[in-house]
Each structure stands twice: as C-alpha cells, then as structure tokens.
Image 1 (tube, rainbow, N blue to C red):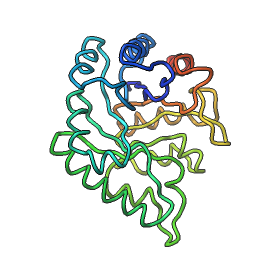
Image 2 (cartoon, rainbow, N blue to C red; image 1 turned 90 degrees about the vertical axis):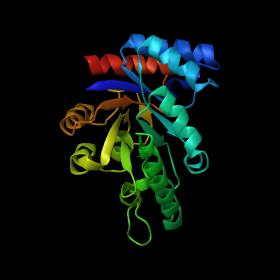
Image 3 (cartoon, rainbow, N blue to C red; image 1 turned 90 degrees about the horizontal axis):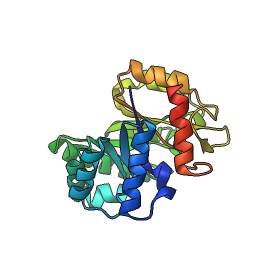
Length: 238
C-alpha cells in the first residue's frame, strides 16, 4: 500500500511557491509516494503540474472548503484535474443540525455528479462531529455517506469512540481513501506511533479493503511539520 502525506501537516514549512516546492521535494526524499494538497502556494496549475512530474511524486487528491465545492466547483475540479488528482475532498463541514447536514448532502451530491464528468471522485473527510447523533436520531456521517464516498480520518473515528478497524471493515464500500492519523484520548493529534490509535490494525484493515493510499496527517505537528512527518514515515517503514 502506498503512503501519502496531507500537506497541511507541513504548512509551517513554506510561505511562497519556491519554499512550497522545496517542502514537497523533502517529502519525496523522506519516502512519501504521494501528496494531498491543502492549498497551492499561489501557483498556477500548469506550473505545479510540471513540478510534480519533475519530482516524481503523485498528486493524489486535494482538500477544499464546502464553500468552494458549492460556489467554485468547476474551477476547483479543473485545477485539480490538471494536477492529476483523482479525488476532490471536502475538508470539513458543520453538522450540528439537520439543516446543516442536509446542506452538506446537497453540495456533495452535486460535487459527486460533476466530478464524475471529469473522471474524478468527490469525497467527504470526517472529523468527530459527524458521529454526534442529531435530534431526530440520525447520524450525520451516515447521511453524508449516502451522497458521496468518504476519505475516512481514522483518528477522528477513534476520538469519537468508534473502533476504526471495525468501521473500515463494516463500511468498506463507502471508503475511497484513508487518513492515517494518531493522537491521544483528549483529541490532540500526534506523529504516527506516538499516540493511542490502532495504527497497525488500521494499516492492515486498509489493505484488506483495498484502499489505494494511506495518507498521513497531523493537524498539530511537533516541533514542526517536517520533523513530525519524518518520525511518522520512519515508524511506518519500521
């Protein structure tokens, strides 16, 4: 199984396009085979695509706001299509009410339809809020999962009190990508192997359900992004 990196993890490593390119090169040198974007450092798609090809790293996917998928969908898809991404991903959405969840479902249903026209797939990336049952007894993640497939963030599943391996196994047909993330019981992420999530089990179950990528992410890297992802890939290689 291939290991990728969500570039949000190393957001402290760059402030401009030149530094962005240097950071991606470092990620490749560390042993990551692909990247998931969370912004493009102001680069045009064609320039970034040329750099990706030169570096030899795969553009797996890209995170976007729900607002971009609602109001800038065609523009967003076209940019990511140039990069070679197979997936566009909603990074986060509010799901505290049925109205908010219904809005997410409408946006993702349309994003799925339009992305498919470009040969791409629209996914939803969960946090733990989607596991909080609504007043009518419905589960936000289940409702969203009816509109599109998931990029399952296994740490937020763990933090929600759900066993990640069981969730992967029981929802295999709805999971297109897997975020491999570690952390503590208080909800603070950390480098892979330094927390309490079932990393070994998640990796094995992800292979069993034929997930093409495990994408490493840490929302709060310590002491910095590159050091954090270096420890993560070393643990996974070991």
